[in-house]
Image (cartoon, rainbow, N blue to C red; front, side):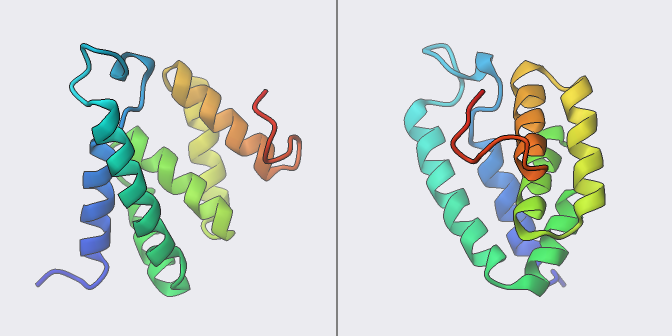
Length: 127
């Protein structure tokens, strides 16, 4: 029997798979259209709002996602964890690793998330 929170995990991973993640994911030759990406992102934001509203659910879902094989899933989950102040040490370690070994967009994103988390830049600073 599927756990109560497994459906959230599965949906989260499915929606992430429908979004663009690397520079080469964008453009006319992409497998994912801009419309598909935007629709998936809207659904993902709504799903995150539901998960984040329940602290116990958030801890279970995000701790599971942090262990996922996909760097994309771990990256996204680590960001969510820092926003909720849960699984902080593991999230920082994941983002540090991605900032050093991930492809360009992921590395830049991980560094930016960590800088914001540490108060080195503001939420509207995109440098």
